[in-house]
Image (cartoon, rainbow, N blue to C red):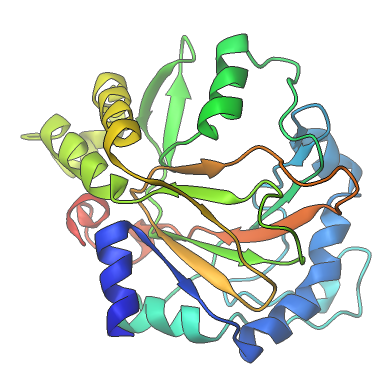
Length: 277
């Protein structure tokens, strides 16, 4: 666990080998997650990029323990999904010190062959950034008028990725820029200097963020992260990350990943997001 902790804090992410406890959760939750794609309301809201990506933000009907109650499982009402547990959860509790995790409703991210394609409302520049830079970003920043400006919105504690399907490594994998969490930390720390944490969400952080992102692209290795069902990976809340274009054969089946991003405000002091390792 010591080596994994060192990797997480130094590189901004770490991976977990096959865990039978997590594998059992994945086996139970997979049909529930897959069913979200066929929910008309969710499909209309989250199917993007020319039908090649179902973003599925907060689409999984899990409760705060990570379990899915029988009456919330949609078209799979008799599927028993237990609370989320295993080595990755224990790492979060013991190493990150987050013992009282209230799990958010997981994102169900499903990518298909051909990702990404342009989609209605996406500018040419945004599409190029998605195609050439994985749409790399730091979670929790929100846009405001005129659309390219950013402020701090949600302050997630971490990103936990749980693969739900067996896919090829080049089937639109999660990507991370190793060490970029410290680049971002320095930039945000300088931008928020002298400002009370309660006022951070009111500040326009666009210039600081864009400059830090540019530095990360130049200095931080881009690493594709691939996992199989029963494995998991954990990304630092400040790390620059994205999704690579689909490189697998067109015949390859879709890749489906559940992402949890609990709100750190439920755990700690207001500046925890920026100052904790």
